[in-house]
Length: 464
Image (cartoon, helix red, strand yellow):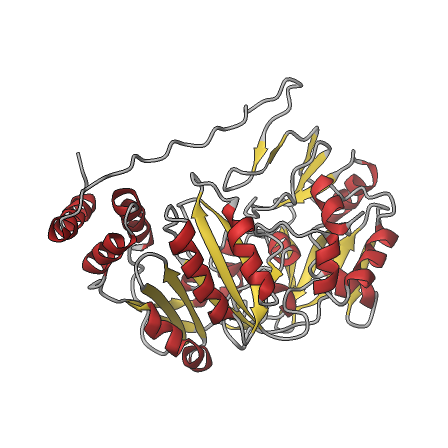
């Protein structure tokens, strides 16, 4: 059996190859990566992140039901103590041989203070959207995946796109932090200010943020528009579109000379019934083009234009929490850097050229977004707005090229890494990228002098 889309792919590839007198070759689908045993020799159960590249066998699994239990666990549990949300980070933030703590039961909206929601940080973003909407409110912006816990999204600097919008932590006006000493600290811009500045993006390295006070906005109805066009045209129009639209992002598709553009703008149009996403079919088409024509970039581009060039635009109208975040069932690994505003498009063009020269196995699109600045000490957006460029590769593919080929391009353009995405930077490099690095480390050592919150990855990252 062969799907209609695959048949079209094979047909398009065959026509292109025949027309050029080339030889038609196909590569086999890559096998599933090996999985660690579900239980280790000591009888401990496996924890594994979403993409499958990080794993651990924690001695203790903790699921506190109250804030007080969180604090007590931090005081008494075996180290390293690591909080876990959805496991959507690609770096080694979570693995521990000690205590793995989930806040899934410390979730929901605790109360409202005017238009600010006081939310427990175990709440998943996908659940927070409808809960806020029930009061006619919404998060000002959302990332493109809604599976994360609020605490995990805050801790790693997770963000959406739009020149007027900060990352999620930028809309926090107060927080409560449970420490390894068993204390609960209230922090905001006027009380425990240094801890507030350090904790908003802290990788779970200071303790556990149990609760935040979050700015909300009116719940807008948005008009979503998705279309394909030549990459050159997208690059020429990108700055104008960021200035014009509430939310704008685009995906440069390597080996096609195409880009997928996405805008969201407020509208009074009636909501439309949710339609089936074409994202999975689009990715499958790109993968099959890689498999069938990866031996020749010109043939691969010609087939891509023949197959995808006439793709019809997609439109939808609905509440922001339903449209801004989408499902991502196809697993991948990802490296993302945040760059000064004058450099992202130049860096992106260099990335595309590097991939098309050296990595013909890549087929995932490259995401470009824009984020407003904030003042959290370890925020990648500390000091002003930045442009974000994210490079993905299929979970079955080798991802080490991200460090060797792509990361140097971003560093040369002044990039800072996304804390939840792959990178190989350590304390000496990071300290030069963040003006408040030393102040953050002072707070961390004061709150956790024994390093109970640090696994081996964080010890190396922080230089502890």
